Image (spheres, rainbow, N blue to C red):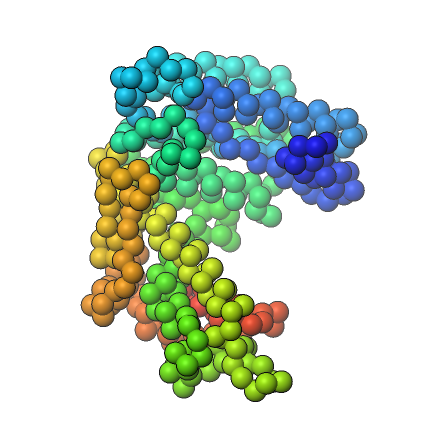
Length: 363
């Protein structure tokens, strides 16, 4: 098979034939036409390959099916074009697709588990582009539901039965989105706690530790007497041969920089989702407090959110308000945790610091 996607599918099915558990998850919208048609057909094709390879177990297919959750205005000059999904047709297309799926699923177990979500009211997107690299929709809350559905599907505690299962989810009935609206992935994987930990990690790394670890040794060495640095950086980036700490060398600086870019992505994602949900639906969402470190311009298609490059001392002190759960978790708590959290045996290099910092952001 020349196509890289299907080549990976064939390899996965062969792994299942060898006794390894294989799970495949497909994301699709139901209201645009292309996704609605492709969703069952891709799964059917996989099942056909499964039968062709005579694989009778260990292969599971899940999917997230997005009902309408956003809408947009189409400029008059593009009304006659046929290359985009027309918002006026979303509900009719959804109704037709759901009717088709209900009949299909009655007679054919294509999926093992399907996670269905949408949004009401529909988010009103302020910009329109007919696909391509100019299309840059904001992250929306219902997409988080779809991602959590995938996490649940892949979780080791998820017991997949003989019968096809369809799961639905929605928020509380008020006009406000709360932390309690985010479901846990499993009994052992609390979504709110892990998202809060990730956001705290992104904040503390981006504004506190990435600046301290960036640059040459002559710049970084001013932190060399601090406990967290001696314990987690100096010890694990020290070269015994040349008797020198190598945190300032290029390969380590690439790690520092790459992690900072990741943290910036996390901060932009959560702030964009919060700002855009409020702006596009008139609903309230206060999962985090973000106005002190970011700015939002709804009319900007490419750069809606701007994250401040630097924070002053007063702004950094507002870290304790970052997660809106009245926890009062401070940067000092993280600093303290860095000095005593147990180091895992399998960690090395900067991985030691990254792991400890992430775990230190857990309340």
